[in-house]
Length: 203
Picture 1: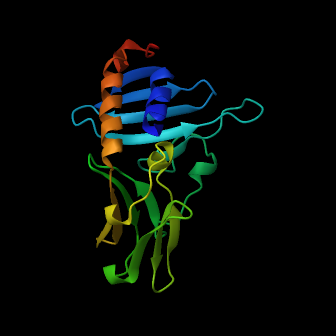
Picture 2: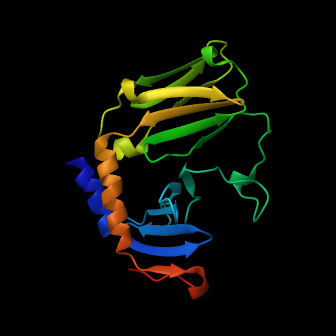
């Protein structure tokens, strides 16, 4: 079963954990050299950030690719490609899940709700957002469903619009909820360092 396969790869990954600023930060290193970093709210257990990093063919570390959470803000640190400043009026796409739903927010979309169409493209395994006035179009996948090899279900999809933000929700299938609960049990076994302890220890 695919869910077990993904969970197994998380179990066997080398994991380190750190408690810092009210967040539990978990770093995974997979045998193929891929890295995944997650941040959870310490109290609610809600996933706040998930990002991936892959080594290039020459072994150099690539940029972190954000799957869940706020996109990197321009300003601090070195001016890498992710710090090219966007026009503040451009639509900003980000994913922020809840306990029961995968959820995406697209800010700076001022059009009324009846202008938007949000649907599932089964052939390409993605969600498609478009406007009848042809001002906005976006396709995006749900990597969690791909990793667990689960189908996309149109009836799980809904959307709302408020304060120039389109909020798209996809109800998590029970297989995902079970896998997330299992992962939380697994993460409780990882020794968690505190930021005052210095570097976090590997499991």
